[in-house]
Every structure is written in C-alpha cells, then in structure tokens.
Image (cartoon, rainbow, N blue to C red):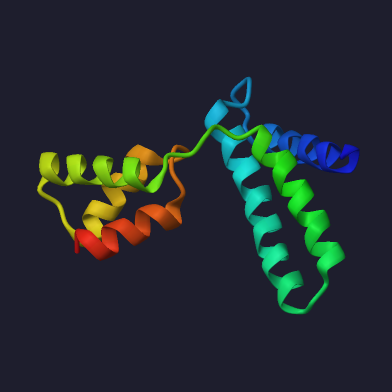
Length: 123
C-alpha cells in the first residue's frame, strides 16, 4: 500500500513541476490517477493472460487503492442520457459528437464507455 501511495505522490509531483501556474488543478490530479489506474488495468489483463495470478492480484489491489481517490465515474445509462442530450442540443453525429461529448464528460465518464455509446447509437 505504501509503495502505491509513494508512486502516486511522485507522479503528482512530476505533474506539479510541469504545471507552472500555482497549485495543480483537480482535473490534472484526476488525469494522473486515471493514467495510473489504466496502467494497472493493462497489467492485470496481461498477467491474467499468462497465468500470473499473484501479480494480477497485486495489481488489482493497487487499482482498488487508486480508485479510492478517483471521483465516481458515470454509469453507462447516465452517459447515454448525456450523449443523447448533447446530440439533441448540437445536432452533431459521429466523430464530431464524440469530440463534443469527450470534452464535456472528461473526467466524469470512462472514454471507452463514451466511445461505445456514440459508436453504436449515434453514428
């Protein structure tokens, strides 16, 4: 646990150093945490494919710790409602709708979920 927290502090320190305008905004903190969570998810997938259950379990534990510090993401149903609302307001479809939705829901919903919904229902 301590190792994961130290790693997160280090990554946030690097992000703060790159961000030269005072305190690191919440959006950047969420971006860093999401990046680290994605690394863990990718590692879990790889370890499970090769049968390394001990390492996969360690990555799952680290992912659970990281997710405690992330805001709750919108569910598929909520994303679908927001996408439909944005599509109705803007009249956009396909890639342009994807860009508008990604901009509005950044940090609030998983990009893969947004992509799935826009691709299947609004293209």
